[in-house]
Amino acid sequence: MKQKIIDPWGSGLLENYEKIIKDFGLEIFDAKLFQNPNRIMRRGVVFAGRDLKIISDALRHRKKYYVLSGIMPSNEKIHFGTKMVVENMKYFQEHGAQAYILVADLEAASTRGVTLEEARKRALEFHIPAYVALGLDIRKTIFYFQSENKEVMNNAYEFAKKITLSEFEAIYGNADPGKIMAAITQVADILYPQFKERMPGIIPVGIDQDPHIRLTRDVVRRVKDRKFFLPAGLYHKYTPSLDGSIKMSKSKPESCIELPEDIKSVKRKIRNALSGGRDTLEEHRKLGAAMEKDMVFELMKQHLVEDDNELNKIYHEYKSGRMTSGELKEVACQKMEEFMNNFINGIEQARKHIDRLNFVKFK
Image (cartoon, rainbow, N blue to C red; front, side, top):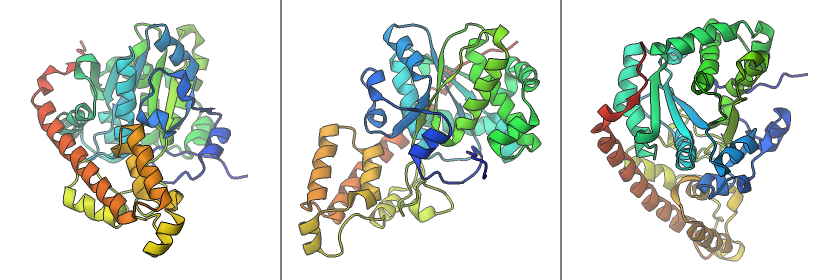
């Protein structure tokens, strides 16, 4: 029997989200658990989680809890998956969570070959400003670099004693030293907010990052004397490639949109994207669009149209055949240009306030 693996460092695609929920023991996401769910929660882009009821109760009853994510400063651009993580962090920030952002400079060094100096530079000059431009509130966010956090490193060594090699291989597929170090450090990162005060925490990620949450939950069960809360997970689907593949990938540059990217390049990609339009205008007017094939509408649903009524109107116009594929793509181009301009301007504004970041001061 083939082993079931989700690889957080790999490029493998996950095609059946229902099967993933079943195979890995996830909860189907129910937007009714959360007050005023955000766009990707409402529209089923957030599709699964772990221990969501604990977070829902903390939110509703105004109990202390935290939301945490990490920055991997290995690239000079980000992608739509990162955008969804930030949007979910923003949601929980606005609903009472203490937010933590760790800069995974040690992981970048051990798994991506990026020096600590370069990782720091990229984080401060681009990644953190990009997160702010996407909605992160720096006034309510605590930051730290992995390489400076001795408490994380000391606990990582302690947690490593609770993990076997066979278990690690069962979760991650293989166990090279760089991955082992990176994964165990992430366990300590995920639990870091609880070192001083035990409280629930939620980690919003793409489903490919679930192995880190599973490993952390296993460790928590084995250090019961520490009285940690099991970390909750919140998982979003991939933004599909414009050619119809399940995930945008830099290996297919003409079907992948990076953030930021020159708007002329982006518009060309959108206009060439896989369409749900029919072969002829007559056929399209008669049958309407094949919505399940249309990557541009999916991009609009996930990222470009905030108002549900506006999206529903576009959906029905296109599905009925009254709107053509070309018209849909032009609407998407306009929306994307507005988003990209706001994102780029937001980064420039955020860079002016980088000195206001609340970094943990370590002794």
